[in-house]
Length: 186
Image (cartoon, rainbow, N blue to C red; front, side, top):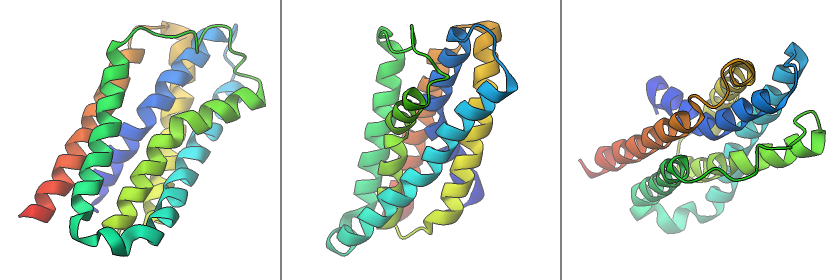
């Protein structure tokens, strides 16, 4: 897996967390460096861990699906990306309103929820036999930086681009799914 693909995967995975981070910036009365660093660390940390968990789970089933692994990776990335695009066009729920983004339990819950996609990507990485640690580190760092920035942007600019970021992230993941499929079929 080349560095550009890893970077695009990381950015795509970070878009859910970015959208939530922007919501966090919107909901906080006054955004501080500590707020942005804490939110970024939670989201980046879980985006780092979940591909490793998914990859480990994938090792147990990899031998059974090696002949159609590229289809599995394509389906997982396509589903996740499609879900992100769909959600970017649906009505927003109540999730960002009234949430205390300084509460560690809230951050833990949101971090898990926004990193489920990374778990599926880790599963996909195991079936195409990609080393996960390097990829996970990049995903975690990129997610931290994007979310850290998202908190400040949310505090300054509100809801101007939250949905568009999620749609772009979904399209990137779909594109990577197609790239994996075409590489294995040709």
